[in-house]
Amino acid sequence: MKTFARVACALALVVGGAGSAYASIQINGTRVIYPAEQREVSLSMVNNSSAPILLQSWVDEGNPKDSPETSKAPFILTPPMSRVDPAKGQTLRIMFTGAALPQDRETVYWLNVLEIPTKPKVKEGDSSNYLQFAIRSRLKLFYRPKGLPGNSFDAIDQVSWRVEKEGSGYVAECTNPTPYFVSFGSLTFKGVGVDKSLEPKGGMCPAKGSEKFPLKGNPDVANGKLTVQVINDYGGFDTHDVPFSR
Image (cartoon, helix red, strand yellow):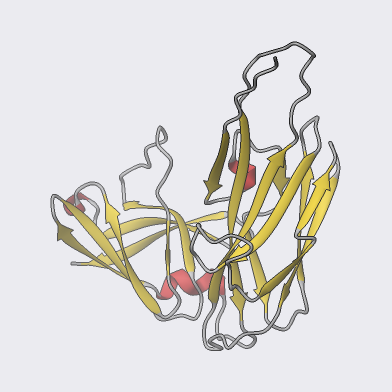
């Protein structure tokens, strides 16, 4: 009798599929900007593996537990499911269906791309176990209303920062008066390097809002500044040294 042990693991990747050591699908982007005046936007991807991959895609409102059936995000994806053969590409079309969203600031959603590998071929009589992964990539999707003042690249210059003691460490509170979300890959006191042995902890300062983020190190030696690695619309990193108050 043939016996198989199948373990399915769903891995949620905050940055995107390109950063996974296991993903076969390379997504050409780490975020999606959806200008309100456009009828649709597209996202391309390619299968870099030697086997076909089944893809399922959907958008959620921020709850990673939402499925395509339970999500109420106002977007339609075409195709919602597709088979991508080895070395072949797939273009995902994203269409806004309409909703009463704020028009004075961006709204953020999350695009999910679930990569389901095909069942491996097993020789007759082979009772070997196998491990199979279903990789889920989650990318930020920013709905950007038409006519917002300024631009997303300069938003970091208007964000103010305050550092305060919390427990045995410190937190940095950002206040963002702009209509653009400010995403960053890392946030540290100036002069304190990011630990390369650990995945940098990023975050997002909300449009026209505030948020707190934990900090390591001592503010007394930071010369009154934080170093922020801002993630721009193209997924690139722009390093900024910003002042903070206490």
